[in-house]
Amino acid sequence: MRVLVVEDEKRLAETLRWGLEADGYAVDLAHDGETGLEWGQLHPYQVIVLDIMLPKLNGYRVCAALRERGVTTPILMLTAKNGEYDEAEALDTGADDFLSKPFSYVVLTARLRALVRRGRAGPAAALAFGDLVLDPAKRTCRRGGTPVALTTKEFAVLECLLRHDGHVVAKHEILGQVWDVAYEGDPNIVEVYVSALRRKLDAPFGRRTIATVRGVGYRLVADGPGASHE
Image 1: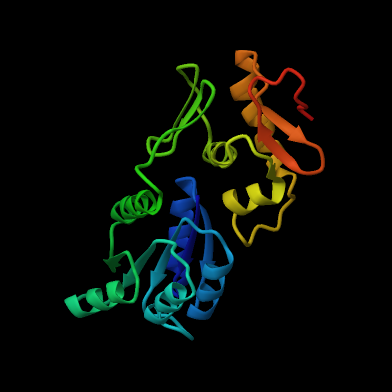
Image 2: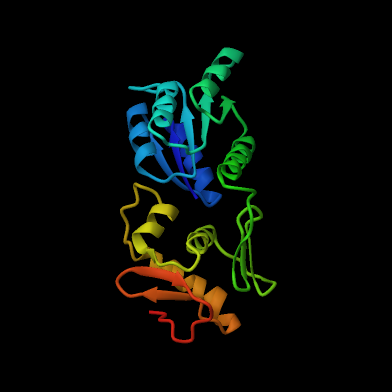
């Protein structure tokens, strides 16, 4: 799941990035309103965390501009202010929720999960492909009823593949959804995690679920005996 955090207090921004990445999110950080507005339009975020007091453009103006330009991504607004008029203005400019500083990280993440659930067409549901079941809400994975332990990145890569329902997912798409916009490492990191998923999800169960599409990316196949596992 990819999140944009627009926050000019760099220590707080880095703390949020650290916590959210530990919880399995891919996090992009913007430290001013203009950058937040640009990235909010360009990238397919599942949720945006937006501070109000920002350089260049304040959070109200960023939120209003995103809504005017057709961006429907759920927005949680952060503010050091506390009062009914500030809360009302946040909602009136298009925010979906607000949270006053200082805030509890546990409450922040609970509200983000709620916003993501609301942003989907219908209640959050487990993702299934044959007997492979991934439950994003409970952070669990099962194959034929057997629990399979996954790391946060393995979970995110598998979720990305499952959400494409058997269609080919390009390597750069996986990078964009699971890592962040600042990632400058080897794109072959995707292959490392796909190999790990095959070792955990396929090999122990005698399956061949994740196929390589040469020169493109990966897709899920229904026990394809001829699937390439390069």
